[in-house]
Length: 142
Image (cartoon, rainbow, N blue to C red; front, side, top):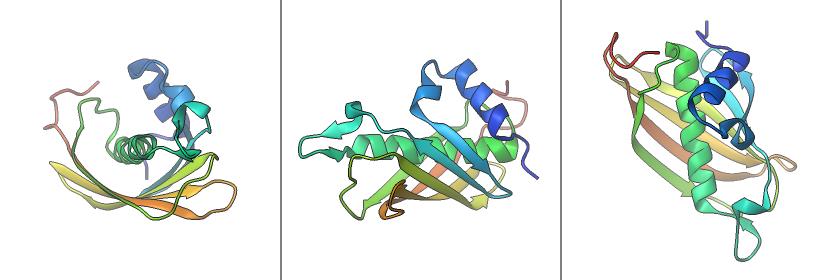
């Protein structure tokens, strides 16, 4: 059972990351999965009319972070220790959907698999594996 639902995650983002709500929309929270949307913006385009790699990396990191929080609660200082991304196809100007799936949730580390798809076609554009360090209980919790 998730500790934080979509509304609680959105509230957490609003309180801790000014402007973060405009960046991502939590669409679904499952037992060990989460779906988040990056709404299309011209700001994310690079030359050639494609969504930039940094925008996709940020979406992958955000999806992993929110999935972890949904499972452990509002631990603001959980931090990325590793992010590996594979760009599969050229992402067209479109909303991007990140589907996050928990691979391992331990006391100190969490590992999340992320598939990023174009919203209108469902085409896989990137896959990432993200590892987070979780602070000890009682430390850095909100």
